[in-house]
Image 1 (cartoon, rainbow, N blue to C red):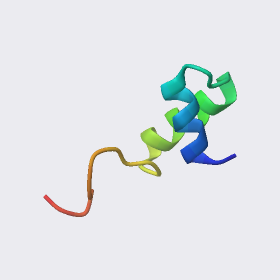
Image 2 (cartoon, helix red, strand yellow):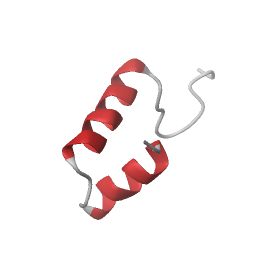
Image 3 (cartoon, rainbow, N blue to C red):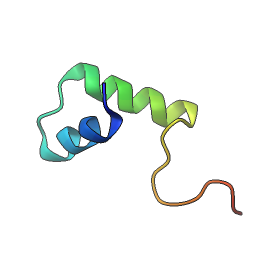
Image 4 (cartoon, one colour):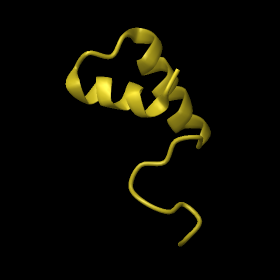
Amino acid sequence: MDKTQALQNLLNGTAPVEEINLLKGGLASGGISIGGNTNQL
């Protein structure tokens, strides 16, 4: 499953539960970053 497409579906309000769970898991684990470079303080 493509994370970019899942995020686009979420923003469009068309994401199924599986995609929402993928995004939630990625955010919780650090596999998905929103808003910049996490390597800089």
